[in-house]
Image (tube, rainbow, N blue to C red; front, side, top):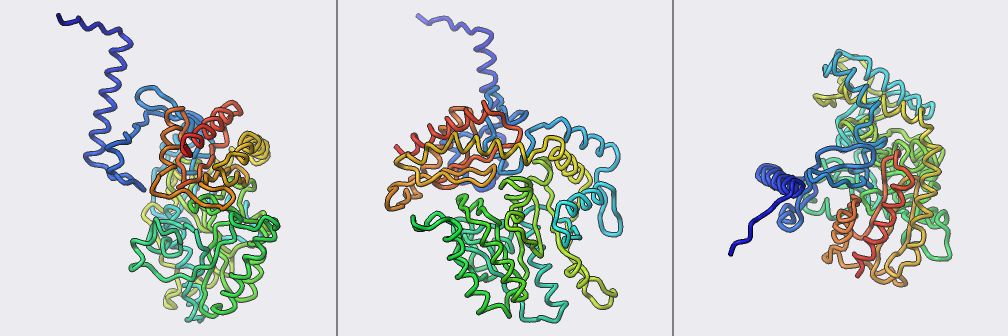
Length: 466
């Protein structure tokens, strides 16, 4: 005898939602190739279609919410669907959506340039807009090389970067990166870069402080500079935190020493502030903590508060003036993007900068970062945690197989995926970098949301290290 199926209204709605999600996923997988993803994984790990977001929360089509604990790849500063940023974008939409920046200009680009220059040390006076983080790095490399060419230094064509560094995915930015996962496949088509050991403090000796270890590691850089300075155009570093490089961190003393050496040996210091800028490390820009002025500063990610793609290069009058000449001298910097300084993106960036002042964000973040560390510091006692490290609003927990020997888990075990899935099952989006779980939330996160996120991170580590 067949049992009659009875569905309540709620059950019917749930089934409808489930069918909707299946249809969305099917449509997606038919046409979309997702970034930084082995698409075959989605045979076992379903995509999650997101319907909307508000504050630190994103919501799927089943009405399930997740705390965006990684700021959607480090871009979101003031929460999803921020009312003020929304309003400023809407105002701009009714005025001008886009116009080329060659031969023309517009107020959002001018005002944003003024605001960015105002945030910089006094020697930084010029803003050059690009399209995204990788293109900012590419343009910075070109700018540095072209500067030396214009000055008559024809040998200066090499660049130096740190081991474990990551600067982007275009061929230029990938050339100066040093993480095999992203780079090794494309090695034959990349420009050769001089790689110097990173000063990160993960493997420092127990009897040394972070500052002592970092200062010791600078000897490798100084040796390289002395040997190759005639050929080096610029040195590119991520100040304080190598974000995609497993959130490894180092002391500001390295930047101070590097700045001195670059000045002495006639080399550009290029600061990749793309991930660490706009308050992530505790100061507005990470290089400020070393009290230095880089020659070229690259900005992106959080520049628009997580709304639009935009990037900028900030530099000084000396570099700018080297390109300033009569047309027939052929010294102009011919680098461009179709959407350079898009007015809508610039308006979002201006709104985001205004919120820093309105909420006294940097001061507020000091309280939040301290609270986050207090919530996670107990993990230092976990048998499979090497350390909990933090710079401002970036906190990382590194899982490890053997604590005393600093032996890592085999990457093939994919412990990070286990942590990721545990997070999703408990309403928190974490996306580990290998064996490193990091917490980089939007600045509008509340203490009860931090509590939930930290508890889930602890549970994820227990689950991943079983």
